[in-house]
Length: 284
Length: 320
Image (cartoon, rainbow over the protein chains, first blue to last red):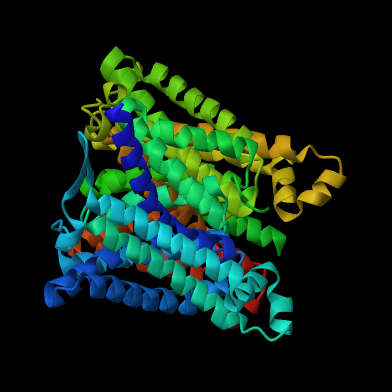
């Protein structure tokens, strides 16, 4: 019983991390129809920027903020200079963003070197809560809380605010949106920046948990895509349920069938796609 | 005009083939391995061109077929002591069979969704290679695969004979695929790329045509994988990771989609670039990244695409 509760907890907390990462990808992917292979790089760069900020200042919250701002600026620059011209050209998007992923990986190597680091977390987030015989690391609880908060804020913004309505309008019909006076350019740029900064926050959170190291970008990228594919592009609900599903499948797969763990992760996904090519909650 | 163009093309083809046959024995062994590698990747890129260039579907999981072919060789040779012909037949058939299953899932979608589903399916195969340690030896990979013995009394252990084996395999794949794309079936694929609805209205079974193209591409990708395992002597999950699939896409895009010969041209450029640049600088990823972006910005139709437009006398490209 203890085994199942702990694995469930680990699966959910990993799903929370995936949500932070994939929520941003789902926004960029579903709302802007951009296949972004640089998403893993935002995650990696976020971790590195936070690391430097903490080394210099010592504040964890400031590190998250710095990562979000720096990576949002990088995303805006990339989108403005290249991606906005490639709408509807999937191949062009894949290759351009892959090129950026290589460049960012190499630049990170130049600046931060090849050693793995762990982002130091504040004392209040370390340690574990004991419930009977079970230990629940506080940091994992924090990951779940952070993801829940981000999900709530995103949902409220998209569904309940004027800016959210403008975002949805821009996605559904950019020409009409422009016609009624919405600044489609600014909205699109904002969505891209938001998606990138969410990935960077995921990178910071993961940095205190699995660390920051070269290659983390391409390691995490397939997971982000899988979440978005399973949940359906551009659907917040889909990203949330997809993250939990992937987090749990990954965790239980690794615990129960270590030899087939990726198979138990990707095969159900292929099965879902065979039935619903647009994912669980995706719109065609 | 048409005659002159055809003559020019024939001349260029004959010249290129002559160079590929005559020059290699005089090259350094380093250049010879790179050229061999370029030919094998050329086969993979050509197979991808069938679905990307001719049918218009960007697959993000094509490395899976390379991996299936390569692992067939690795596992059959090292565990069961199988010979070249067995490994070849199993590798190609396995890749084709998996493509036949994946095609059922993937071809329900187009565009971004096709891209994503092929990515997911590619990850299924990668996951098996990575984690099914008792069969694939996981991240350590399978090493020590010997050079093939074809049973024709020629040893392919040395670089030069193996190069000619790769060249023969490349020409075989090229001629077979050229036959395919020039056949009415190949024309129907191009028709589907240009307008699926029109082809459907004309009475073509669009899905079946795409499906056959997809399976053929997978099988030929497996063929490349078989050679790759023998060339490298080593098979690992890196052969079928996402980056390899994207690299195959780049090769086709750089050389020119839907030109068949563009794909190996792109493959040769990328293989040479990766290996030669990394000799001179550690920052080769930076340069590779710039090539990805530069291809899309400066040569969206690829090198042969630009040449083709130029030969057509279309001057519009020069102004843009």
